[in-house]
Amino acid sequence: MQVKAQELKQDTLPLRAVHHVELYCGNAKQSAYYYRQAFGFSFVAYLGPETGVRDRVSYALQQGKVRFILTTPLKEDGITPFLSRHGDSVRDIALETDDAEYCFRTTVERGATPVREPEIIEDASGRVKVATVATYGDTVHTFIQHIDYDGPMLPGFQAVPEDTFARPVGLKHIDHIVGNVDWEQMDEWVRFYTDVFGFSRFVTFDDNDISTEYSALRSTAVSNHNKWIKFPINEPAKGKKRSQIEEYIIFHNGPGVQHVAIETDDIVNTIAKMREQGVEFLDIPDSYYDDLLDRVGPIDEDIAPLRDLNILVDRDEKGYMLQIFTKPVEDRPTLFIEIIQRKGAESFGKGNFKALFVSIEREQERRGNL
Image (cartoon, rainbow, N blue to C red; front, top):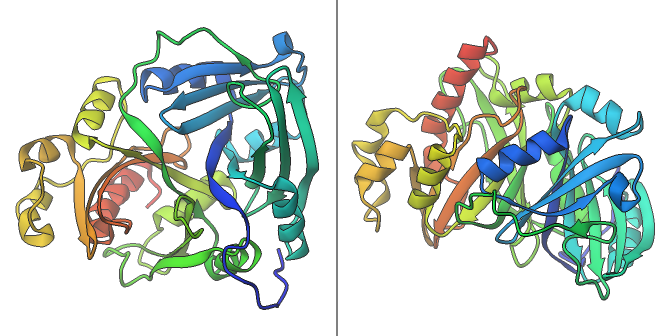
């Protein structure tokens, strides 16, 4: 990946939000069952042989404005090597735009690698223009432009009957998506998003901010102008033992999406339901809550349920936030999900890094990977 050296205006791409996240899966049907029962997503549309697509099946899931597409190959094609290398993992962070052609041409001109030339796809529900460029690892961004489409997900998908099997938990929209890259690659990929996509640096953390006795990492977040698209980029930093980013890179076989953060309006109720439905979360030391109010100031929530559910709290100059992290949702210690509730805060929980990393290191040690 090379970025052309030129002066570029910030945020010149007409991007609005994350349209959907597509995961390649070994068995999309079974994965869809998990996300419906555990995370409460509804099965809204299907694509596969029954709809005229012969090489893959895709299950479109939705809760609030969060859309996941789970895709499994039916033949040995480009999806199969991805799965062999990475396991179940995020392939596509699709971005909603008013002009997919412009986004594609502009990013390619600035150095992005083209993956799919702009084209119009259509069915009885209307037309959508799509185009795709590459980003870190084997991850891609597809630009999605609705022309006159009013179907359930994208042309080619067929709507399914209302999902009475799903158990919603109050998830609203994607807050941010975090990518892990290899040693000394963070600055390169931050430049990719600032120079090629016109994003702005949102916040930066170094190994003094994000470290424990054993491991460390560096992170910079970039965002578009309306901050509906936020991408923190992590890289390892030197420590006594192997960091969570190193573990990810080893088991994912390269850079990729580490976690998807999803916002809720009532994190206590959301996490209580998710725990009842079988979602596993990182354990936080009970001592974290002993001086919580001294560290973060007054909050609306009672401490007791936060302690019981292992929900973390942090504050910045604009307010506070509550957050919690699942254990990996795959067998490989790679992809996980964050649930977050913002009450004014715009940061990513810097004050929680120590407690979070201690919990992650405990899981790494159990796996023999610390």
